[in-house]
Image 1 (cartoon, one colour):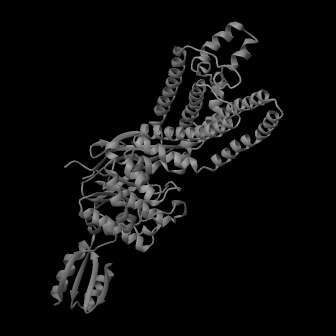
Image 2 (cartoon, each protein chain N blue to C red):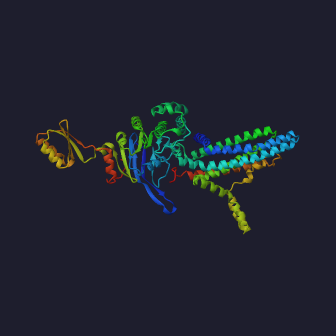
Image 3 (cartoon, rainbow over the protein chains, first blue to last red):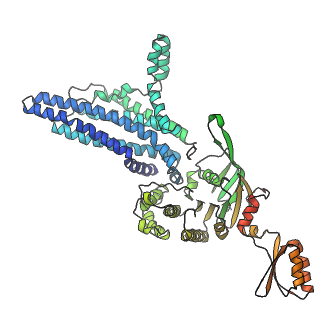
Length: 267
Length: 316
């Protein structure tokens, strides 16, 4: 229960963040910027080209789904990198961990709070896009739920990475470290210009600790204009298990760093 | 009886400065002492002596380089120990978006206090610290004194056995300071242990049973307040009918003499006491009382910090 209470309190604090307000306006702006296309599709429909209008509408919603997942990455990376250092810097961590809360429980509570924020964001996006789908008579298939699940896992992995790096570094360095880590496989392409053999060797080393993004490809299921790619259930189970496993390892690493860390701000 | 709080050869060093100008600063050096159950222990020391470091170590916020310690036989930082501790930090940082009621509810839940108990304790606690009217206002608009009083309330919420208070009267007006004293004495009456860090010596003198004086990371003295105040090398004689000649002679030997209501108050070195009393009797004077000259804890503190030898502390 302590994890839950820390999580709820973290969520309440995050909701009052000014940066989050700015983020909310960004989402709103994205939504409003799409209204022109929806108006155009409506006009097209009235002119007798209903199928083209529906297609245009569906394409726009597909695009917005992708955009909102990318926004989700931003939200996860920033909130994950700034939360724990912010608690330490402001000193609010001290009275909380002066209670009977272990460092592991506290860390999980913060992560839960971040996930409640992401869930709220996902809920908000679902309501907005769901409304648009009803408006445009565009009906998603059940595989859309798989897409949502994969998207949440992928965003959570980015969250876990930035959260882990924030236990080691200050927020900006944590963000840079996370981006560098995710960009590491790109190094192999540069090395390939000089040596194919060394590029392969490097790739095998660098891709090993990376998340297997192919297993979490939500893009295959965020489709309204074509059929989703069919995969066996064992493949879905593998993808979900990989996502959860990767997240668990990140949290464990974060705990191992945080358990012996000073809770006082560095001078 | 097991100690409520036990430090054993605890040392802590901080590293300051950048990579190329790193310096190690010893905050604590071999600190050893005990706090007994049911006592109010005052932890004295000038700024930078290492008091707050010791408190942070016992709460598990930082870790010692050497040595160890325990709270109710649990190692520093153990959640089972923290369940029995009420901690008031020096720099109060509470969530600004919460109200006092929400904050107390949150902290109570983290300490496994049943919801019904939390709800029953919050109103009297807020009443005790005079925050009833601000009970539902966000903490963002609170003054330092109000936050300090709320800090006291959150310390008391789960009825802890050990209270660890870092500068509890900081930022409080005289009424607030009196409130803290009353709370501390009430807690003592209920058998609670209080570990109190402060540099407000008058507060310490009024409420503490024992004190330890910390300076530059070392424990210089430890003992009961009464012993320390009476450990003076001077005595105070109260006499009637001393002759002017005797009083002049004593003044020349360094005695402080004042007259009030026909009585002479003579403060002199213990070595001069016997000769002075015999002289007084020989000249027909009357000795009313002889008591150790009481200094204030401030005299004692300055004596220790400004040049008294470090005696170390074995906690006994």
